[in-house]
Image (cartoon, rainbow, N blue to C red):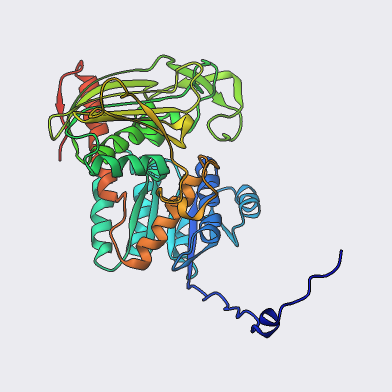
Length: 413
């Protein structure tokens, strides 16, 4: 085919001017832990600066774990520049400005406080700690550090699902009116088999609690975040259905591992917890969390009812939000699906065309984005260590209520 001839106007036009991208300052990240959450956080740090225009560029400076061979393999797999076997050495590195804590809960307080006192910003996985006292000490350290310009954020990553963030906007705008009910469940089934091995998540000294802290922390935080108010009291029951399990025959992998065929050990945390609660406004809330719901893999569901309407969310359909406007005529009113993939929706301005869905890993990318912007802008982090402390106080009240035969227990504010 013949080449199209240039017009006189095209021939006379100057060539386009290409402006090089301004080089953003580097923000070095050091991460402690490299298993399930370590992999998820690595994905977030590795990707955020390539998707969003950030004022500072995250750099994967170093990753830390006790097993030299394993942590070096994780560094190579996830793109970290260096590996350490002592978290104190990681904190001391000059190329680390953020310390990201992805370890079991029993080490959160020691690492976070040391990092903050060393002048680092901190991101800590949920739940913030294993006890209220630890969470209080961490929050006090974060408040002191804030006066020096440091940021401390807790990793409630489900706040970063676009549909959840958008639901919060709708509620804050009054679209469902005065709040009446919050209903939250988080169901998994990876412990249904009584011969699943005794991983660290089943030991109180490491995990603090079982399904309550692992899953319940998420839905307590989401309920308070969406409602825009705090839980002030709870009434609870909990149960451990399998009292002993096979010991691990080797290292754990993700949520499980290889079980020893002979030796068994005691499970010292809950398998399931159910509780009701009251929010500060008088609205009622109910929660169910378990790792023993056969057939439920990662079923987090929320429904919020107000006098003007309702919102519902299902993590297994995380690009969707169900909305009912009760002010519409009854003949046409009903729940309708909102596909939360438009560029005007939260976080979606940098992603794919409408209808092209996001997934679980994107919550960690959004989390990294928010933390970098918070550091650069000098604004308050969300969720903060104070938010993590509030959740810890609710969990403590739930455990106290369950121990006292479901007696109503105030949440210490």
